[in-house]
Amino acid sequence: MLLLALLGGPGASDPLAKAQERFQALTSYRVTVRLNAEGSEQHVLRYFYRKPGWVRIEFIRPHPGLVLIYNPASRRVRIWPFGLDHLPRLNLAPDNPLIRGPHGIRVDQSDIGVLLDSLRERQARGTLAALGSGEVAARPVAGFEIREEGLGKPSGAHHYRIWLARDSLLPLRVERFGTGGRLLESVDMADLEIDTPFPERFFSP
Image (cartoon, rainbow, N blue to C red; front, side, top):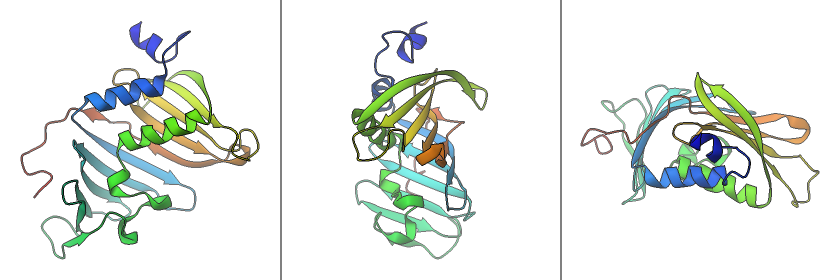
């Protein structure tokens, strides 16, 4: 009953604020991300995060074997194009266009915390409405929709749908829509695991 109240009951607290609180409380997570963006090839990758900002990405598609590791202390990204046991090895800044994802996504700005910050900024400029309950990969979720307003665009021209897990309160699916309800981008994080213990040198192999 508590989760129902948090995620969409009458008079519920802001669900995205609750999601941010949950992210702030965790220490790490792992997830398989499936990103579909209009005009881009599908991206499928294993994503690992540990505070204060370590990121490891293992590509499944479109560059199988590619590994990126972001070090928040040095603010550099190490890259193994053909896997950890193969040369060459590169060292680049996170804003290097060679390693930016669809729509300019940077590895140092790719975690769930950054996503939630962005969604709350949009929420502040528009409205948030509950969509009800559902399932993502057989996990119970609560859905919400953000519609931006006051941006010089027709009402409903851009909106977002967010599906938050009932257990972790974190997003399992985010969808971005354009004019006429056209789906522009979707991100699925269906196998999210939080507070994951990682081997000692997992982020510094």
